[in-house]
Amino acid sequence: MDSFIFLEWLLQRFDRSDPGPAYRRLYQLICRAILDNHVAAGMRLPSSRELAAELGIARNTVLQVYEQLSEEGYVRAGVGRGTYVQDISQDLVEPLSPPQDEAGRLEVRREDVRILSARGQVLVSNLGFSNLQSGAFMPGIPDVREFPLKVWSRIQNRLWRTEPWDLMRYAPAGGYGPVRQAISDYLSSVRAVRSTAHQVIMTTGIHQGIDVAVRLLCEPGDTVWIEEPAYWGIRNLLTVSGLHLVPIRVDDEGILPDGAQYAQPPRLIVVAPSHQYPLGMVMSLTRRRMLLDYARQVSCWIIEDDYDSEFRYGTRPLSSLQGMDESGRVLYAGSFSKMLYPGLRVGFLVVPENLADTFANAVAELYREGNMMNQAVLAEFIREGHLAQHIRRVRRRYAERRLCLIEKIAEHFGQDLEIIGDDAGLHLVLALPDGVDDNLVVRDAFQQGVVARALSNYYLERAHARPGLLLGYAGATLAEIRPAFDTLARVIGAYL
Image 1 (spheres, rainbow, N blue to C red):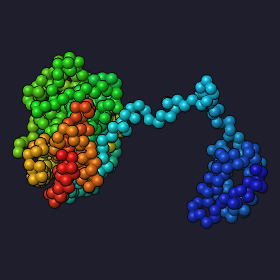
Image 2: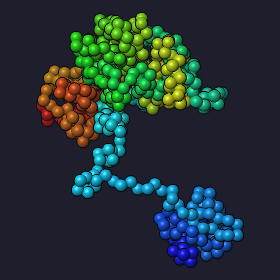
Image 3: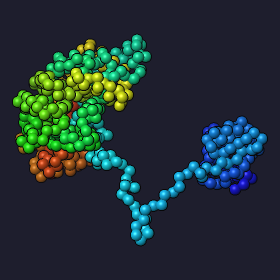
């Protein structure tokens, strides 16, 4: 089209009733016309005075649009010489000839249509997370309604008033100093973890802690031992990191490698000795000593996932595996997601002294940590004794809910269904008879408004998976647990 037709084209499309800036509307119209080849290279645009008069807008608006188009290479302009459309076709890459087969037909290669990487495809095909994060019987979820919000807010408000500026910056390598000291002191007294503040590396949770450990200590293809069954989140993280996972079965005393597995040492062992997830057993002293001695002999690393160690009913929390380590092979990972609330996103790694600077610098480099205000509040929260007080209070509350759920199971099934791992944590496992599809039970229960997780999904070797249901009781009140289990019992009964 020529300049006159182009002007008519603009007049038809320029909407004067649009409340948005006239500059933006005119700029977008001219850009679209040039990119869609409605105007030819070299065509002279209407003068700014003419275009402004026809559109009923200020001339300065048109001049700003022409100047922007010139800076971006759509047009070329010269004082007194007019504004012309640039030839932008020379900036395009010549189209490649698509591959064809012998008959001349278009050959579509598999890699041409792949969107995700191979490890990306593995990750999204094995998702385990849920958008539903509350109610009966979602496992692994504390009752956030029990969180001492007033105490936390009072500390936070005090810090905002007195020292906010330093807490609004990126965190130093390793995290906020006072919270590292507070965590070191707390772990020493409660979990018998041996560390200095220097060895405590702040993270956003267990996942990030294990991720950085894998990046620093493992190569793709290295062998990693994981418990069988195990937490799907860590299993998927290790898989997409390119590691070779070897599932090691567990019994009542914890992880139990066989002779062939011992003969092929791993680079890394990931265990939850204080409360195995999902089955809940505690690793015996004999197995702990065996594992530490083996790691020392073959020079492999152990990540101790300290899952739910605070919530034991009837006995004190157990000492850590790290506290028994004399050779510096254990990395201790924890978080405050269950103790306080999941959205806090504050976790930690306790690493051997010789790795402390390396890990601190790596976390700072990879993740550009901040979150110092929450870390500062947490430091005061621990130091003033609120953490210990909160844990004691919710432990009593969770114990009541656990007992309520056990009583409801007995009411409906007596001793016919086995309860596993009920003496600690935020969930128990209700075993189902062999041959029952626990995923179908979970599906039907969800349709009735009750949430559970299928035990079989936690096994890497699904052929040996045991059917059962993970039932979380911490996030539901007694009034919610009773009717919810009545509903779940009806669903289970249909499969027995």
